[in-house]
Amino acid sequence: MDLHLVPGAEPTAAERAALDGVLGPARDGWDGGARLRGPEGNTAAGGHAARERRHLLLPALWALQEHIGWISPGGLNELCRRLTVPPADAYGVATFYAMLAVEPRPARVVHVCEDVACKCNGSDELIAQIEERFGGEGELSADGSATWYRSPCLGQCDRAPAALVGDAGEAHGERTIAPASAARVLEVLDGAPAGEAPVTVFPQAGEPSLRLLRRAAAGGATELDDYRATGGYTALRRAVDLGPEGIIRELKDSKLQGRGGAAFPTGVKWDAVAHQPARPHYLVCNADESEPGTFKDRVIMELDPFALIESMTIAAYATGCERGYLYIRGEYPEPQHALEHALEEARARGFLGDDVMGEGFAFDIEIRKGAGAYICGEETAIFESIEGNRGEPRNKPPFPVTHGLFGKPTVVNNVETLVNVLDIVAHSGPVYAETGTEVSTGTKLFCLSGHVERPGVYEVPFGTTLRELLDLAGGVPGGRSLQTILMGGAAGGFLRPDELDLPLTFEAAREAKTTLGSGVVLVLDETVDLPRLLQRIAAFFRNESCGQCVPCRVGTVRQQEALARLVSGKTIGGAGRELAVIAEVGQCMRDASICGLGQTASSAVESAIERLGVFS
Image (cartoon, rainbow, N blue to C red; front, side):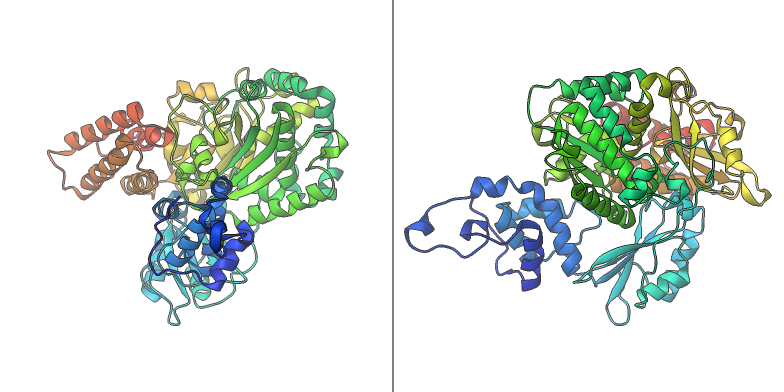
């Protein structure tokens, strides 16, 4: 391929070293090395091999970002040479992700969350103090070494408000600050260390009924010996005894439904992939937990990483996958570190590799770090991101079970869905199905945040009412009144205080015209300005739309504009006309958007208008 690189832009030694760390040293002129002279120099070779490594584009972009602080034209040129990718293509990928920069940035960048849960816990005041005492976002510190930016949800809603500190350079790294104060953020911007990782508090710690949280709530099991001492890897041994067909049979008997929001039967999905003749098969764990208000997967990955690794290994054995990808959101440094350590231990002890536990099957897992794109939580957008493309969803059909990652049959499940598999395999599907209801079996993780006495991740059986869950969390603090509850996150819907007796099941949520979604339960008291909260939700969807399809790209903008006019009182044709525009735009997005982002972008806004009477 004849690459038209940016003229005069050459990489620095540091940029070359960063890329070598991901791609290995250049081998010849067709791989970014020295061009050959004479007859050999007139022969093209290695192009196909280089293009087959296109899937390393995002990790290589991350390497430049982490080591240099931004992706320079020279660094991008070198990356394009190494992978035989057109610069315009690579630039399109780099600019797709919010955490990657193609303009110079200082070595330290602090991202301060301004999303709904953090707003309930003082992020507006925190940001105002930073602006007053430091300067607006993007402004540099006195020595030019640091800056800050507003950020969508960082997945720290249980300990809001939150900030994420990123340091570039030789000793690059990231650290979460939660809860964050203006004083602490200003210290970090002034060069102070980011500090220790925040501590997760489990309000249900010590309860014997916990299943998915039993290890995490008891202090965690981040070492393999600790994990095995609490029953770890017994499920995988039973899985080998059952065989692939037996595992899938137990999964179907359990009636396990996906916990990511779609609630698709997991056993049906696994069975479809297992019987596909095309090879290889792939397994993708969707750990891109970016729905505002969601943080349940974070605590499992950080405190019980081997449970996820064992679950993925069982899934791979049952469906014939030899390779797994764990796609984790870029804002989760602590969970990523825990998983990296756990993977190293699992490989060293024979629980991953060419001969897992000596049972004659091969499986390994590679972590892929996202870079700040909510859309990559959509299952086909994950494939595009892993393959080195912009994370834009694909049209369906074909579906992932036949044409998924790299065009091959692929199993995609989120973290919570996968860890449920351990109890199903260990104790049988029918025993698992005894908990919950006939349709919604097992337990469910809920993320309680906002104006609640004891925020955190709660595990309850399906069928528990919303009132009972809110009582577990201590209710609204300070004697204030409950105004509403946002269920399912920004893509969910609102419930009134008189609807607290709703059973938390998939079937009851559908009947009530709401959703459990990813398990978000955001509690809002009487002090919340709902119209302005809706503006934040609308801004979130406008910013996170990938722009691929017109209904979502245009609709999210029109929705935000109409809300802005309603809030300001400067309507066009009156409030009734603006509400009609919001309803019409919402219907268009639901009917014609390619993926779930556009199809649910108006859900919370319309539910607030219809259910709560906002703007009426």
